[in-house]
Image (tube, rainbow, N blue to C red; front, side, top):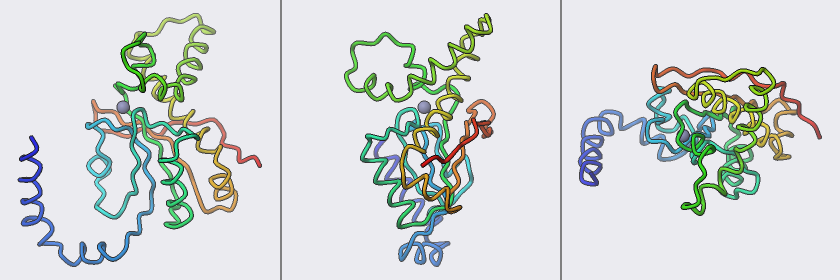
Length: 202
Ligand SMILES: [Zn+2]
């Protein structure tokens, strides 16, 4: 498998890089991405492929479950660099149906040490959906319930994003917009998640 990647790189150099030498030479000097993508690490959700974007266009942070945790210094640094240095005007949080991370919210798993700790940052999405379904006295098929949790997790992580003061400041100043999306692996389509009104409070 590893040799496949290196073989692929040789093809990239000879078939793509050489053909677009000027484009890559310009990119090597400076990047000017216009979107920060916060997505899941899942191998089936490769941002450049599903959005048909090129190198240099999207700044990327991926983790299990496309989670925004305000105690995550990795993401915090990505946000700070995106907003303060790259002046990126749009942030997308993109979940996906069939997400193993979100599915693991239902697991009673005591084998893993770190995954449950990480998923605590998404647990409220499951609680919100289950509470709504209980209120409706309605039992959804398991897959539909999980799809709702995937969507709610995107809303929850947008809420978390707004807990960063410098994110709120940029939004209030009209320099930044945030977006919630979900990718459907069954159709290849991205769906916009209708979100709760995002209010930038001080
Ligand atoms: Zn996932």
